[in-house]
Image (cartoon, rainbow, N blue to C red):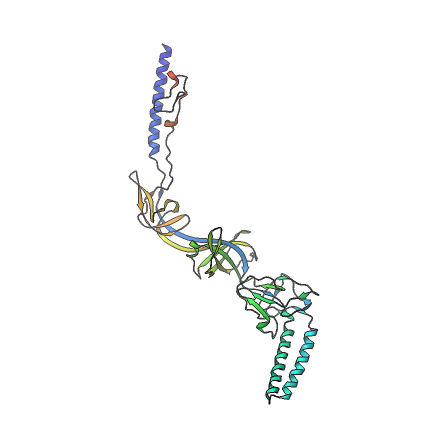
Length: 379
């Protein structure tokens, strides 16, 4: 009798627990996580990484061959425009200049009254000018104010005769020496400086070249403002502007990218050449607009939608979007401020009644579970 009463009590308690758990599950299934459409600002931006470099640099070489006699600078030195950087032994060049000058003076004295005399005069004049250029090519002078970034030669060594200029701020052949013609050195504007006897950069004029994807580069245009941050300098930022967008793309691992140059407009003192940096360009902004989390917006088949929760019912609703940022998206139509939005992949939080099992075998005939609950031992 006692055992029978105990069994009845157990069954009654289990039934009550099941009823309560079932109620909890139903209530939990109706609880849907939502976010509220609000009013605020949306900022859209694109970014890329690169290394800091000078926007005005030159790789300087002598305009003639010879033995290096003197080097006046070392890496890290700051120089002004026109400063003497290095020179070659110019004894032979000076001797040739003296001989050419004598021949030229003689031709001047002879006059140009005949065709033969005129031809001799022209030949002597050209030889004298060439000798002047050769003497001038035995010295290197700074074409602009800047910092010496490398000295790639030594006193007593030989110098090649292939002068080169590079950097977007340089002009080929200019400033190699007094009286030197632009023909004494060749330059390729826009190339990164390398291979010169002495390398010079204006560290006050810096830039960064980042590669942007083809979808991002279409949002860029010259003159847009940019913010630059540095991996090695937490909390330090620089400002800049987009100054060049290359029209030709490069492809790596089937990804099409375009080099974009951002020139710094404000350079913090801690920034150094070669540092890794990230540039971010704001490509769109909308203020005082209806916004929803960007993750709540879906696009499929050319239609953009969000899921609204109204009166307990989820409804897929087409919307017109404006500025799309990383975290927020502007909604121009389809959603009003205060609307409840259901983000995708929302999970319901049901009760555990449907998953609760009562152990089989001990207390219920046949070892079965509570009806409608979890299975017992004999499923």
